[in-house]
Amino acid sequence: MKRLAAFIVVIFVVFIIYFDLTTGTIPADAGARGPAESAAGAVYTGGTAEKPEPSTIPFVESVIKPGDTLLSLLEQNETKSYSIETAIADFQKLNNGIKPENIQIGKTYKIPVYK
Image 1 (cartoon, rainbow, N blue to C red):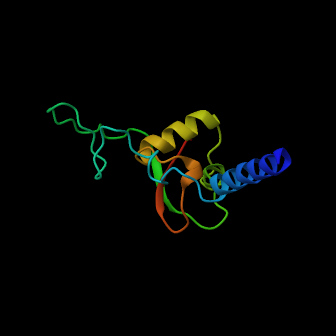
Image 2: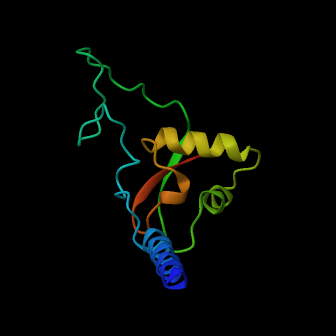
């Protein structure tokens, strides 16, 4: 009887792990917005309307093709000297916080240019 109970527990744990890895339990959009943000993406600032500062980072807009990464796009623009951390931070600033690993094929993104 103990073996049967242990077997059932092991099967249940394996199923839970499989379900979590394939389907997941967290909605895909849950991490994109904080608790104080609305569906439109505006942050509630307690009654004061703040406009985001215009970006001073030079950029070029690029449509993403299959296989494109932030680094490959930087190389296509003949960007010579940059640190990866700076490129990632600038990409996120230019694209409203979108992480480079979340870019989607067919969409247009602003790619920082370093000369």
